[in-house]
Amino acid sequence: MEDYILKHKYNDSPLEDYHLESKIWTIDEIVNAPEIVGWTPAFWLFYNGFLHIADIDIFDLFGTPQEPFQKIRKHDLKKKKSELEAVFERLDYKKKELIVYRTKRSGINNWDAIDVFSIGCYHNSKEIMRDQIIQDCIVRDKEISEKYKKSWPMRNFNPENS
Image: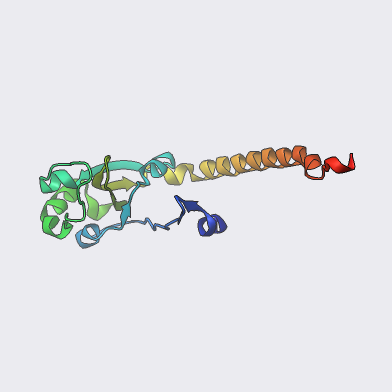
């Protein structure tokens, strides 16, 4: 995985490594939550057993219209700290370990949101999920190996020697 992260490119750019942490958050940490620009890890968290408990639309929080190609950097969460704290109080955030991050994207399809996940069934099912990933990798490696073996005779083919 480390080798993949170091060498893999997306649109000719290296991958960015985002650290998401399950913990009991303070409101200051939430206001300064890690920003993930251009995509969201929500689907990966959901498919790995984490429970999505809140999606806070920053456009709604600021009362700004959501329009294509608008500049989303103008939303300073420090200005809405008390409103955010009220939302997180309803989630009982001071007593639960949560994963909190901000996800932003500009363009035709844009967003600016804070996603909140709880552990859900992750701890109960992580071994099953990890075993499935390992099995999928083994099957994929076998398929690649078989494909390579089938193409091997063609690698040494030289029409001049025939």
